[in-house]
Image: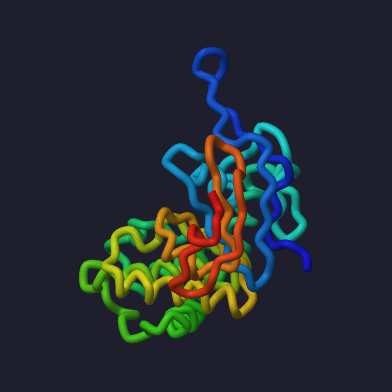
Length: 240
């Protein structure tokens, strides 16, 4: 099966001389359609760098990053931005919703920026909100929603327009346990429907929602394990 995301022997170096830091060192990584891959590792292991490279927010020092077969290194800034708008969705811990816009307006904004009419963007936003189960909050502003509702809006924004790759950076970090599990179930559902997902997390029970768990340390992939299913603990399988 063709990978939605493929990192091939990727290195990312910051600084030079005494300030040189290798954030990633020869990392190869894939995420396929229908697959949720969890990335774990201590602080400074390279998790955020991997996510930034995967979404075209940064470029590798060496190696290649391909999204649906397109090598991002062969694109200019505008080309990478276009791939992000059409193929990649981001979900962050702090939601990153615009306070002055309603839920539907937040979700519709990427489609309007990509040329959809306001009506078309609103229709697609409503479909996305329905998919995450919160169409009823469409006309509420972020401060009128719970944390779980805001995160679901952020997920709806990340997948509006049928984007194929979802990148989630500690998406449950600001949520209580029950709400966090609900958000992970939504991410799992999108992957089961055919998207590829990458979940950065430090919680083994959250990684249990994934199909595979990749462990980073000091910029290297040091281990990989199959997750044991929802609420499973991949660390019990002997990885690391």
